Image 1 (cartoon, rainbow, N blue to C red):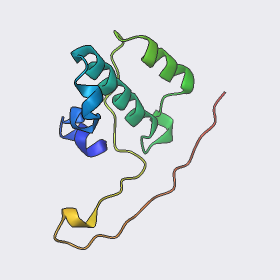
Image 2 (cartoon, one colour; image 1 turned 180 degrees about the vertical axis):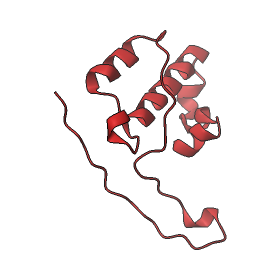
Image 3 (cartoon, rainbow, N blue to C red; image 1 turned 60 degrees about the horizontal axis):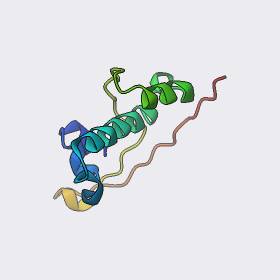
Length: 97
């Protein structure tokens, strides 16, 4: 999802059956993808709270921030001629009230 977003190919992440319904549905799915990426940003302090997520989902006219790199990224070793090891960094969750 992150790679598709960075390459401005977010629609490639959407299931083709759903993507072909309507343009507005595709726009809504891209918005959900963007919100999802905001929720898994590496810096927990920049992640939206649940109340903010609800506002983002309920208000399509609200401009969303641009997501930054997620807390972890898994890459497939076949994507490169170089051997890669899988690294998964733990995600620290912060509970706010």
